[in-house]
Length: 119
Image (cartoon, rainbow, N blue to C red; front, side, top):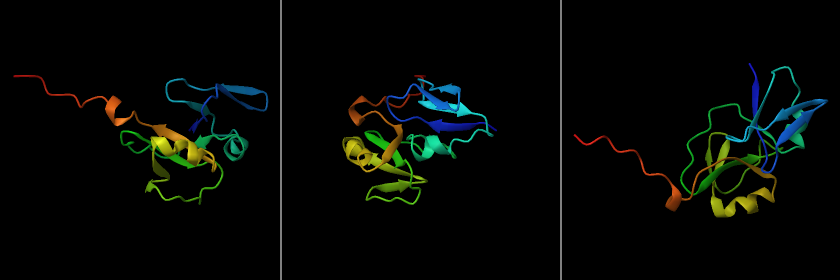
């Protein structure tokens, strides 16, 4: 089964040896065959392997995890393997080696829930 990795912001492709893997612009991920070694991308390149479905992200928050230390912790709420971080704190977390896995729109830009059709 192919591996899916979340790319760091501003990345448009990943190179493993002589093979290029383009970043999907819709979800900022790359997909690589299971037998390809992605440890360099994960340990030094800021890529994060997506091993489980990403939990829902609260409006105005981002899911983050440490780029190289799976045991890293912080003061924000943990959601599975990720931390739920207010959007305004993302830059602070990135300066400590954390990377964004998924983001939600701020609460004032979030889409309202769909309403059932009028009867």
